[in-house]
Length: 288
Image 1 (cartoon, rainbow, N blue to C red):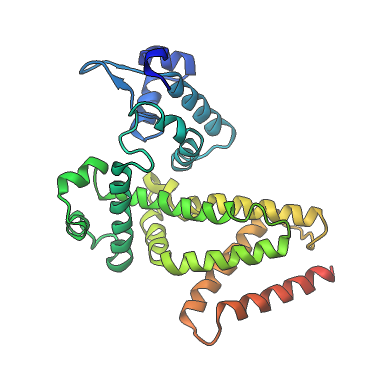
Image 2 (cartoon, rainbow, N blue to C red):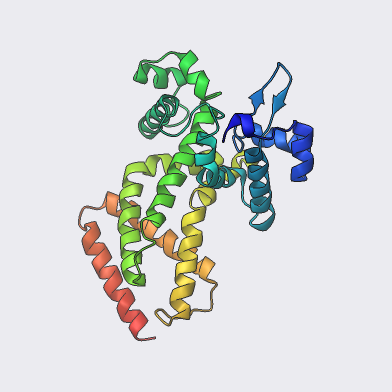
């Protein structure tokens, strides 16, 4: 995006074009769903076509799919990340930049400390001391510990989403399920303490509900449900009197618990468990 050739808008014009209130635009800016505007004064800023495109995209996601803000943020970055990066410094921490690398270092250290010490016993000073950076540097990227906790949530959401993206080219349903199970186990093994923290910190807390267990697995569960539905339609598995979504929840829940047991019980290894499970599943499917 060439700044000289861009048609710039005031926030009032941007809000009107997008069919949203100024309050909503400010909220999306605060939540990191839009790139920062170009400041022309202490109280004056200008917005581009990219901001308008982002707002229309966000509006569609919220209206059609009722997506929580955390999931919308992920979708916006996937859709518009390259455009933001071309925007002449519109984003303070672009992917691949030194700023983004520093931000990711903080997230990784927080992940490590949350896993070993727990959320409440981890302090900002633990993170900064572990990285040999000042608290001032931390506050360039995050407002507080809760803010970095939400960044950790987004990081893990991305990890789970990547599992599915790597399976898109696999045509065989059972092979795809087998690979999904293996990859989820190793993700669970690496991050299970943080998953437990996310569940514990968000249960019963309405202000954090969009960052809870259901939200972190949302994309994975939706894709799993769609996979089961297609397999039923193609006659690969028995069509039970349950919705594919509910069946996906049950399958995932059972395997999630199995991952926990496999880490507690060394009598069985993952390959032995999965081979037995999928032999049974194929036999069951073949006799329906």
